[in-house]
Image 1 (cartoon, rainbow over the protein chains, first blue to last red):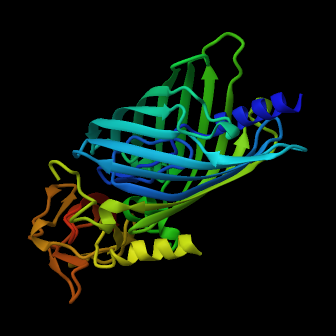
Image 2: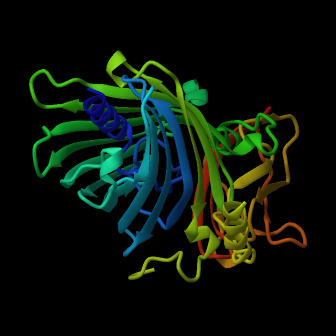
Length: 293
Length: 115
């Protein structure tokens, strides 16, 4: 049943792709949160990821390469929209290669609150994976999926001086429910990123003498997990250790993609991203919110 | 190659821009202990600053110190200086906020100690 194998394999490969590539960076008090690669983070921003490239194998040994473009635009200071598209190429072992665009994703996000003193942020959003806009041959869904999501971010800068070396740590996370308009079961999507900012260490805690480029490095590990609500559904997910270098106008990120269980794959993959800060590149024009900037 | 050219063109359009200002280094250095009382606090940032919108507060064990308004320490617009009163041995907390030339506001705080 090579046709069925191809279909299942490609569907699995596309499932492992995030519905919306991560995009957004921001500040909460003295804390700079970089844009994370595998899980979306809580800020609305004017940003542009070009590209995010990912290479991995799923549990059926389907080798997938994806190249994504993501654009985020603030409408107001606290409300923004995001648009994403990926070109996916999947290679089934012993079978054909299928390539094409995945479904277009469209998202909206609202920052509920930012607490500068405690370096905390909370946001809500919804992402729509628009069915039928992607290529059937790569397994792109013909139906849409809506994912309302809660986001948070917290820096540990308010820890006591007794544990000052822990203060550069920060965590961002998201929890969403994927609601397909047809067939597929609803699923819980969880993203988590644990970061250690060397820039924060150097400027807020202790000058340890780091020079460029190390003084802008942020080692991190991300987790992206999806659990179907349906009984017997299989949880899939990855742990993504890596590093982000955040410069003045752009950031570079690279992460390994480590499957968390057999259903998520057997081989370590790789993801890299070049990400531009439009608000810093064009602060007086397209980098400002449309209203209230 | 096309992608690299597109990226180069994209950033070239923005070479005049400034970004969020990060604290690059300070004197006294962040989190250090110094042996002699500094007469001046020097804060070097990654970007040019709008001086009227910058502020520095220093707090010791006896409360806030009178440090006056910050000024530029040199010919660039990236280094702030504030004069310090005579400091006694102890711990000091520095809180700063700045606005970079493109109007982005950033803030931070750190401590240093005097033996």
